[in-house]
Length: 60
Image (tube, rainbow, N blue to C red):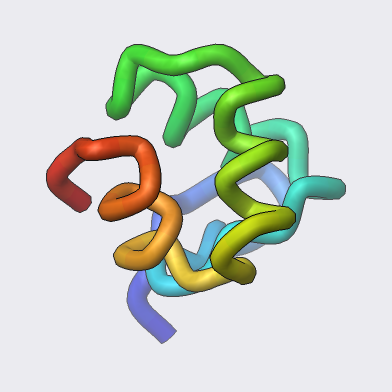
């Protein structure tokens, strides 16, 4: 599994789990958006980061 190393293991770069604080913080910083924007996009298009990035108008 490709992902980001975190103290508890790896963070999946293909799917975003909103309950994983480190993953949400990573994508907030990478895309320059707020938690609310990520949450709204996640609810609208699902959990795949490529779809969330497209919804936010960002590059994955």
